[in-house]
Amino acid sequence: MAAHPRRPPLLSLCLLLVFAVAANALHFYLDTNEKRCFVEELPTDTLVEGHYRALEWSETEQKYVENPNLGILVEVDELETGHNVVKTRGPSDGRFTFTSHDSGDHSICLSSNYGTSWFTSTHIKLYLDIVIGNTKPDVEHDRSHVSELSQKLRDLNMKLEDVRREQQYQREREAAFRDLSEETNARAVWYTLAQIGVLLATCAWQLRHLRRFFEERKMH
Image (cartoon, rainbow, N blue to C red; front, side, top):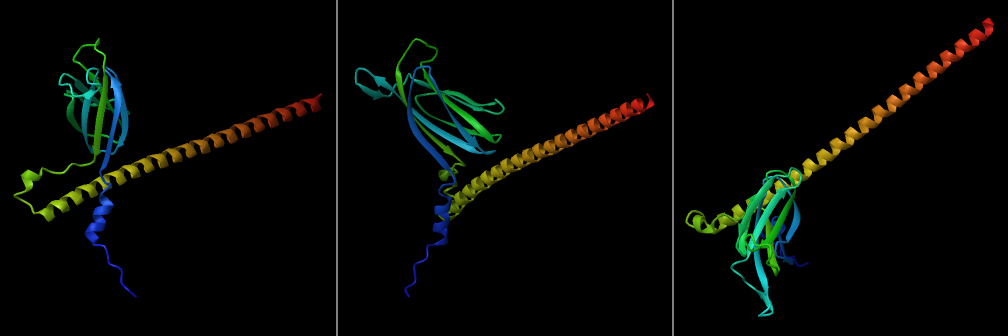
């Protein structure tokens, strides 16, 4: 029987970890001073990098073109706490980076405008690329210190750390849900015991009242 060739372990590990860092690329349309928001659920201490590129509709050329006067405002907020993580204004082609301090949903909002002018109206096509996870270290800085194999191993370790944080986040959510379920069950038990206690007290009072009633009837 012919033996099937075995896949190298390092290649298998690379294929397994290729999805450790999530990347979201999209484009959308908006008008001047219009805000568009997206919600991302992030674990604690997760690095997020975003790259955007805005094009303005040109009536003369009948297509979307670059405009150096077009500015992009980026705002990132933690939805649960309301804490503002990022608020920065950049050019039509720029980047933003932030690290999540707490786990949960984060709102990423982008808006376009021309400085403080609220009377300029135009249509914008905005490309957005968001990468969630640790970024690679500076290759130029480390090139003289580590070999190519060491660099690959470092990348794998970083991706493994991302996986570990994601698993820890899921375990925290499961523990919080379990605690909530146990608390709800405990309240239901105490509510049932209270109902039984009220019922027993009511029965005892009725029996006592009936006993007095019959005793008074006998005396008469």
